[in-house]
Length: 520
Ligand code: KIV
Ligand code: ZN
Image (cartoon, rainbow, N blue to C red; front, top):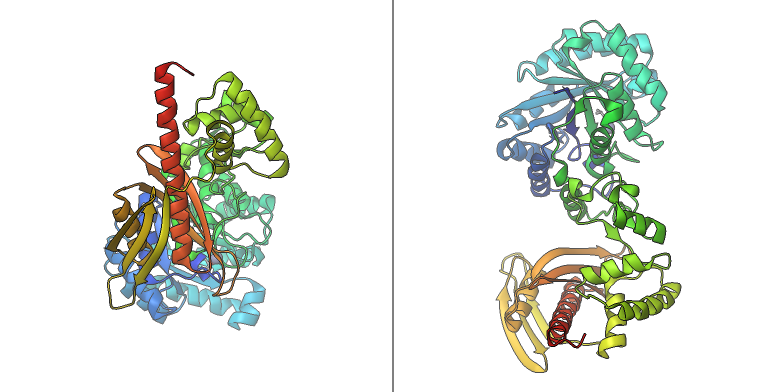
């Protein structure tokens, strides 16, 4: 079957250490459940001795999350290790991860310890940790800037003291792949009993090489990779889990029979959950999980992908749970892509209709960078239906009551095809209550497929942009709303999407009737 590469996820520890990425214990728990569904092998849930909040997060994850090994970081200090062990107590399977720096610069300026004192500390910490669990990981912090002979001694000491996993961190993201691969090979060849433990790597991305370094390490014998969702982590981040896992999966021809047990179909969902929790979105061109990872704009690429996906895609978007391969329409797009998109939207143009829409589409694409579904609909409506700017649902007024000691309640007054309606509803939060009140007033229950909100500027009075994707009786539509008030932005996005779905549905029905009558 081949050899397994263990995936050690440190999103909730190293990832969370990055400025702007901190999470509450509740949020960490939610992420940990998703990481368990992703089927990572180890979840580093936090650094229990670092704060009360971290202790609570590790404890709750240890208690509630089943499947992966739950791990806490601890400095090579008995007091830290004791706290980590306490936080991990309820876990079915637990690991203590203890570390100390082994590079001259860290030992001299940060630890103010001699190399011999560091070796002594490793011995004490690892053997102490073994009193609480037989799964103990030791990391030589700043390994890539450590002196080789001393690094070997540090690892040997940790193994002799009972470590079961040895981790080689490239703490400052300094290594170059060829050199890092050689370091791993040298450790394999020079440290006694290294074959009795799992050799792990932990790479930072300061030079943009974290994934490359992790992969070369695996090629040279490492069997655990420490990584984070979306590559978040200290400074430039850690190796991105999705990149490491997919590289091993896609390039089996290169990596041989190595495999991970990650359920790759959960990758996109996990990435999105982290974005929503931390409020930090990945850049559109981020490998595997960015919005453009499966988007094709140029006509040549679009034609290729439509004829055979593998011409320009090495990963099937479904394998990572990505909603679909996105054909982005722009000025480089051709007739094939336009026709395909129109069909996906429910319009089946005749040849003459397609010619006409294509001409208008090219004119528009010269003025506008990207053509969204909404633009295409507007084009079709103007050209064939003469029904621009239809707004079957118009929200006239809404009022929301919310607070820390009450159930959020919203009342909405709206027009539905010129008929005035009103409804009140409660919800999980003010946005939820308002959306539910709108649905109640309309008597419609669209399925909400996606909802996101982000600040367009960094201040508390920022404009918020809400995006909604919903499905009404099999018709999908998206909407956007911008306002300084997040509830208003959400209501605008929701009604925008709903109006499109209603209009689109009616248009499709009309066309079907016309077709049945044989006039088209
Ligand atoms: O980057 C690093 O060295 C670490 C260790 C604590 C493993 O995060
Ligand atoms: Zn790190």
